[in-house]
Every structure is written in C-alpha cells, then in structure tokens.
Length: 456
Image 1 (cartoon, rainbow, N blue to C red):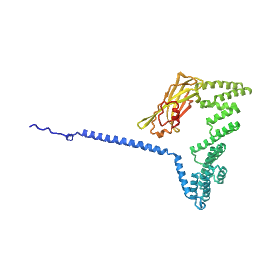
Image 2 (image 1 turned 90 degrees about the vertical axis):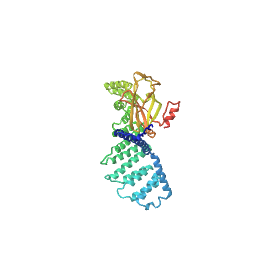
Image 3 (image 1 turned 120 degrees about the vertical axis):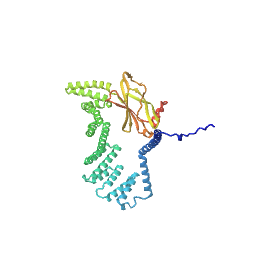
C-alpha cells in the first residue's frame, strides 16, 4: 500500500529568526507608510481649512456686527434714561450707535460717558473725537482735544496722537490735503513725547505727512502756483530727504522756475531712477541752464550743460528702457495641478512700440504674494546679435516656469507676477503686472484672453 504523502501547511514550516524579524519589519513599514499617508492627507486638509480661516472676509465680519447692533437698537430704546446709567452702559450704547453709523446718538452717549468717567480715563474722549471726525465736525473735535491738557500723561499723549491721525485721515479722504498734513504733524508732535518709539508707527506718520504735502503740491502745480508747490515739496523733503519721487517733482517744478536748480535735482536721479525721468523736460532744463550761464558770463558752465545734453542722450540709448517702449502680451497661462500642488507657467510676447530698435534686452519675472517676493526668474530676451526693430515688431514667445508650488486655489488670489525689463541690471523698469488666474488660460480666441484676465 502506497503511503499517502504528508500534507504540510505553511504554518508548519519552521522560520528562522532572520525571517521572523524581516516579516516584522515589513509589517511595521507598511503600517508606518499607511499612517504617514493618512497623516499627510489630514495635514493637507487642516492646512486648507487654516488658510480659509485666515482669509475670512473682514467686511463680512463687520456686516455681522452691524446687523447685530441694529437688532439691539431696534428692539429697545437705548437712549431712554441714558443720563441715569453708569459709565459702562453709556460707552456700550455709544459703540452700538457708532457701529450702525448713527453718529448723532453715538455722540450723545460718549458725551455722557465723559461726564461719568474717572480722571485720566481718555477712552471716551478718543471715541467721541472719532465720532466727531466721522461727522466732519473738525472744530468740535479740535476743541475737545484742546480741552484736555496734561502732556506728561502717556495715556493722554497716546489718545491725542491717535485722534490727530484719525483727523488727518478724514481730511485726506475728502481731499483737504494741507489740513491733513497739519493734523499729521500734530500727531507727530505728541508721538515724539513717547520715551519708547515704535519704528512702524513713526514711519506711518511720516509717510502720511509726506503724502499729504506732495498731494498739496500737485494741486498747486495744476493751479499754476509753482512757488507754493516748491514750498510744500520742500516740507515733504525735510521728512524724507532720500525720497527720489519728491526730488523728481522738485526737478520738474524747478524746470520752469529755476533751470539750474532743476538740473541739480535731475543729475543724481539719472543714476537712481533713469527709467522714470522725462528726458524731454531734463533736456530743456539743461538748454535753459546753458543759456543762463552764457548770459551771466560763465562759458565753462554753459559748455558743461550742453555737453550734458549729449551724454544724457547716449546714456538713455544704452542703459534705459521705458515702460511705453515695449508692449507686453500674455499669450497663455497654464496652472498645472500635480498631486496637491499647482505649477505656474505663463507665456509672454514683447512688442517694440517705440521708433528705435532695441538690443540687449533682459527680463525679470517676479512672483509675489502680496508684497512678499516669492520667486524671481530671469530671462534673456534679446542678445548682442539680434535686435527688436521698432514700430510693432514682436519677439518670439517667452515661456516662464516658476518652481514655487502653490497648494490651494485660495492662495492664488493673492499672487501676482511683475515683469521688469532692462538693458542694464541697475536700471529695471516695471512694464507689466498680472494677477495669477485660478484657471488655466490657453491660447484663446480673439477677445477671450481679456475676459479671462478680468474675471479672476
């Protein structure tokens, strides 16, 4: 009788310690890999939610607060017997009416709060000043600020600083720039009494003063009061002596009033911001300065000015590219989704719209998230051997691929791409800025690209 072969299961096989260890490690590795995938997935979604929460619309929040305040105001007569209520109630009522922009009742409530407030409590004063300013009751706001005098009290100093900034902002918003500048200067006067300074706050106040004076100067120029324009620009220059925009405005105004002073302002700007200078005006100032030097018996100086005209022309031709010299066209914009990431890939064409041929042209494509530069890609557009002829000649398509990975479409709303062109790296000109679209833009039919770009 033939013996039946014994059946052995795989469990009957005796495994070595090495095999057991390897199987154990494999099981651990599989478990770890699975856990890692799940963790990454959950982390991704958590990140998406976090970004959504960070970008909650502040306007919606303020609307919700306004709606709630309206309900509270309409449900009961908050002004009834308010004079008999305590300080806290008056402040809350004032805030509710201020939230719904009922500044008349808000003013009454804050005035009552001031009567009930403790000494050196300047919060109701600040709130009342804010409401008066919102109603453009500037004289009353000034009288309120003048009524409290104790420059040694740091809370009062802070209150007056903030109030004068608010007043300046209101004046600025309604186009009264000179009064805005005076209010900002008062804010700076009180701010300077702080022993500890905040560079951000200080810069903010100075920037406000400068903007207000330059806006005032612009109005003076339009009205034909160039001497007054110079006076206000000089005030702005004292606050920001290195501000090239102020110096350029002074150069332009002086080109009529005093050509020699205009040249003195123009000359250093030739090295700093040549792409922003109107060389027609600069050339006329040089020509007038040369004639004046001749009339006043300074032939060497006149010769210098005339030589400068020629050297400036050569400098512009070799070094400077103007924004109006080149037209930038976005031919396509591909936003590729790879796994959980988005790749950005725009394609541009550059057209020479000037009368001159352009050679040796380069470009920087700068990807920004708001004011933060994320990545810069540099490309050579034209070399020594080729040139872009004037009057409408186009370059071949230039495709740029950014290495930055964008994780959510929500993020794309805040990304922009700046295009800088230059002949010399020192003198770059911003010629184009676009928002990064949420959807891919492929070569469109006529008119489609424009709709796509404006519908972000």
